[in-house]
Length: 248
Image 1 (cartoon, rainbow, N blue to C red):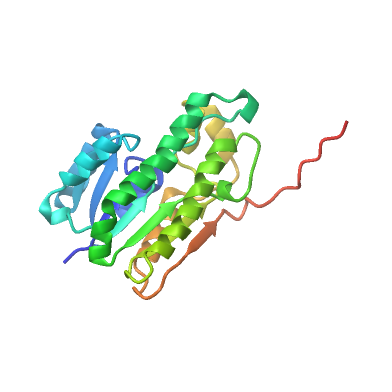
Image 2 (cartoon, helix red, strand yellow):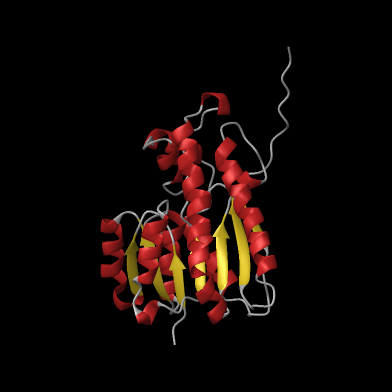
């Protein structure tokens, strides 16, 4: 019998690549996202191996309705990949848009915990696993990272707490913290500025969605007595800079 993964943010980036990675290796996937037209394309591509679910992860009522509507042949979820998330804006905190901050909190924190809470009873029943997608921004601050980095730091700590609470249930919990990866991430952050995206990744040989998807699949298919607590990964061409020093 095929295992079942629920992957949020499945319409692009890490989520989209993960759908392919898991289905190509015999899993069934519940693919979630806001963009129904992209989910339809995935359904046409993967057929009976995929069940698309459209909802806005910022809306708890939509989450509950969507999960309750999952058909019986997809209900026994073995793996939750909390991938949906976003960064908005690159301004310093004092110049930032509060609405963008709230959107990041609602998506990266509230949406993640609401969906996890809803699915946990099934994951415990299945002795399954949770993989939360954080970021290196959780550990290493940079100008303009402010609330985005804060939300991703929450994901790291929530993952550790979740693992502690699930002690004895057999449920595994992993937090994956990627660095520079070329997806639609920067386009979303800059409201569609393709030139900014190209400039960021040019010559950097960043990681790809496929790189991260393979990492997620490796974690998910380890023997059930093994738990990877945290994985931090970067492209070789990304590392660490000096501290900032302001001089009068």
